[in-house]
Image 1 (tube, rainbow, N blue to C red):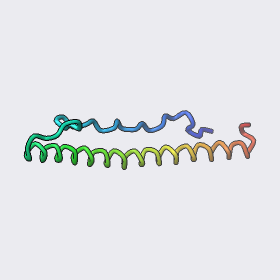
Image 2 (image 1 turned 180 degrees about the horizontal axis):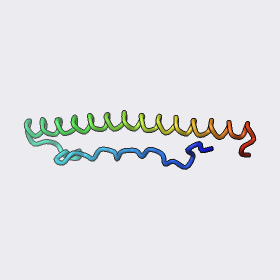
Image 3 (image 1 turned 90 degrees about the horizontal axis):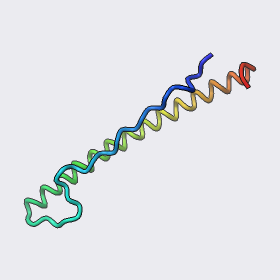
Image 4 (image 1 turned 90 degrees about the vertical axis):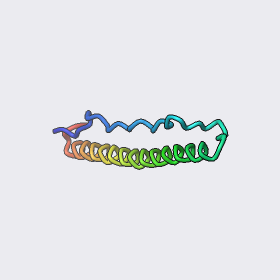
Length: 83
């Protein structure tokens, strides 16, 4: 009887890196530079949001798997197959 307790958990994807060219510590020198910084910041915000949604899914799937393993082992204990 196997409950899958030794199966590895799903790994999280790495957090999105700051896009090349996005400088969070300086003031843009002109309007074009400010627009480019804003575009890069928005790009990073979108990537971070997508990462967060994916991360929530990984946590949910891992929790579901953990609960399934726990239920399986509890059933085996009730049947006297394991202690």
